[in-house]
Image (cartoon, rainbow, N blue to C red; front, side, top):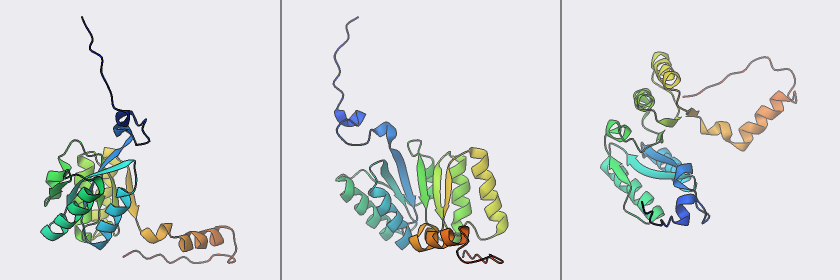
Length: 181
C-alpha cells in the first residue's frame, strides 16, 4: 500500500505559539447579562479556552455576545442558543460558565453534570438548601470539575484578610460571620 505524505499545519500541534486544539477547553457561556458577559470576555483572553457558543433567553443579549465572540476570533462560528438544554446536548463542548438569574442555577448545574460538562457557576448556588444539595449530588455523581464563584473571594483585599487571620495578626478569632446572597 502506498502512503501519501500528509502536511499537518503547525497550529494543529501548537508549534506556532498557539494552543493545540487537544489542549484547549471548548466553552459555552450561559447567561449574558453584565456578569456573564464579563466572565465570557475574561475567557476570551485565555489562549487555552475557545468560546464556541453563547446562550441567553434574551435575543439582544445573545446577539451582543455572539458579536463579541465572533469579533474576537474573526469568524462567524459562535453558535447561539436560547435554551440551555439544546446547548448542553453538544458533544464538542467541554465546559460551561453559568451566570443566569439565581433561580436557574441548580437546574442548569444538574443538566451540565448529567451531560458531563465541567462548569463554573456564579453565586448563589440555588434558591434553597435542598436545590443546592441536589446540584452537589449531581456534580459528585458525574465526577465533573465544578467551581462555585464568589468573585470577591479571589480579590486581593480578601486574600490579605485571610492571610492576616491565618497568621494570627488580628488576635484570637472568636466568631466568623459569612454571607453569600
